[in-house]
Image (cartoon, rainbow over all chains, first blue to last red; front, side, top):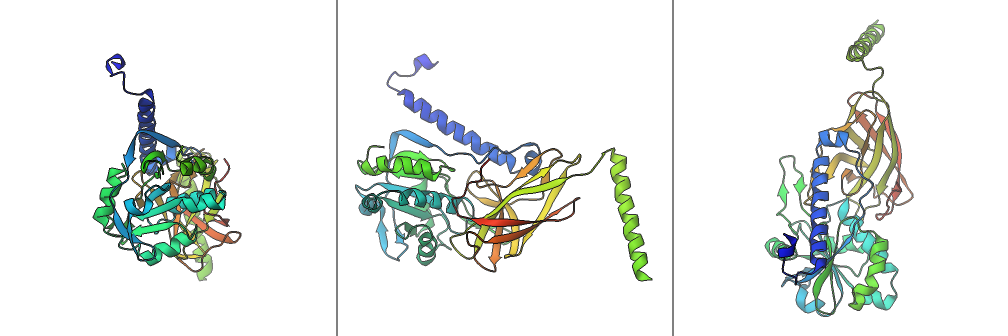
Length: 223
Length: 151
């Protein structure tokens, strides 16, 4: 069967597809572990290390206008044109993965020369706009880096933009117990300043060291 | 007179427990040890996440039924689901000869109604309650948000 694939399909695409499949199955493993019975028998692996997935077909930046963490209108395409961008979809009432991801990025950014730091735009798009007001986003992001940009606004618009980037987020629901169930993306998207498209996707667990190694290339548009 | 009666009742209960174990044929019950406890310094003073590993070197499984902390009015074990949603986890098994690991991206103690914002370098107390074993209290250092335990 592989012989019947058009020869124009780059091998790298197959590798990327395999990587995505691996990620998906890794997530499946997590689902199994979340059941107590499975947890009993599984010795969860050491904190899974993340990895960068290179896209053979870079994803375009979505049309998205939201409100930034200072309360001003923010047109994503217009404001980030020609700039290197790291984007993450998360929410602030998330004590585990979201702050870890932002802290890892912040630590990597701190290692860059000041001029490079100023070029990079780190954008946190909330998946919980009802609770993540611009004010709250501003306070939350300030704990990592006051230059990080927080975006809030219409959930449907956020969901549509996320979907276009391959990230599924669901509308927050309040459970019977009074808890909120909110989703966040597991990936950080890196947009190149050369064509404003996503070339690299970092999976959950990517360390600040990994980000630090890649950021100069992302900022330079050569990643 | 009341006290001896209560003590006697406790003794009878204890004997009952021992008898139950004996009838299972288990040489001993669960034997738990908690290690690697820590809390991540949160960006905001309203919630934080805590982690630890429970090892069971005993001959019987146990179940983590609840966690409390000196800094939180409310503490529950949550899990991060593949879609990034968090859900409260039910009682979690600590298998005989196995471990229950709480770590980023999986199970974590969600600390809410914080009495103060935990800061790196401080210490927080967790008390873990089990179906069989006596409660275990551990001191958990507060670590930076990007902290990754060595394994």
